[in-house]
Length: 366
Image (cartoon, rainbow, N blue to C red; front, side, top):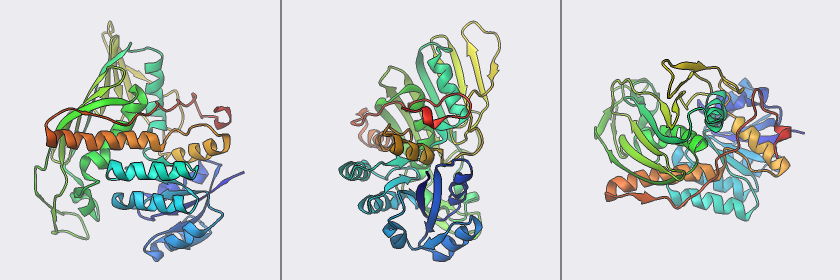
């Protein structure tokens, strides 16, 4: 039996979600909606979706169980709350909200209605990160003591068609890309206890050099270079840099340092590899083959896992609690910079259950 799904927001990212039923049999996308109805109609035609409609019509459809929310960040919480009010479980693109207050409101509203909340990223369920989780759980690098996570570039105004929102609250490198890195770190190392950091707006104005808005200037209203320290509950210390202000660099995406070796983790914005490991007494790096499936672009795996979890009654992996913990960490990093101190996180979450090797069998989940 399939779970009926509706998608709100038919921009670029919607295409990979609209393809997800071809990978995950449990999903049945029955409607898509957008404030631009023509855009919804175009995606419905392209992907053979039965209905293109307004947001209000989609939310009123009693056959839809899960709403995938692909709107811009500043309205993620608003759309999630509307879906919950309509009796549907929302699964949102990241971040869960642009403030802790928004995220908490969504979680509390869902709990009151006995509904689920899911949230991207689900890349940590791909073969790359899942293989790394298995290596850590097997003790291949001993006990993790430290980690580094770096995402540095010079912003999307040179390639994105509509880049203004990247420089407003709820975006910037931390809220736009940070969820991939922080979610992967929490999935591997567990929850974060406290953070501190520094953040700045290096360039108060950005010039769009992409089409169709070439030459337009953007006023920057959110930090574009963030350097943070993450203290994990299990004792590891993480170093994080998220930046739209760097032209080039040679830093890795993520590395995990253990008492018995080092693990090089693949780009958490992808589902695959490569992965390298070097033990304390090894003389060379060893490349590790992926032990888990879903190494291609498998966005939608988090929705599929949530659909299976709703049916079986178990916790789902790309959960609202995980997304809220990441949101708490991100907002706390900005608070720490502004206030000049460590910030203790008020949220907690469990490490998501790992997937089994190869192609995961959801029928075995409990």
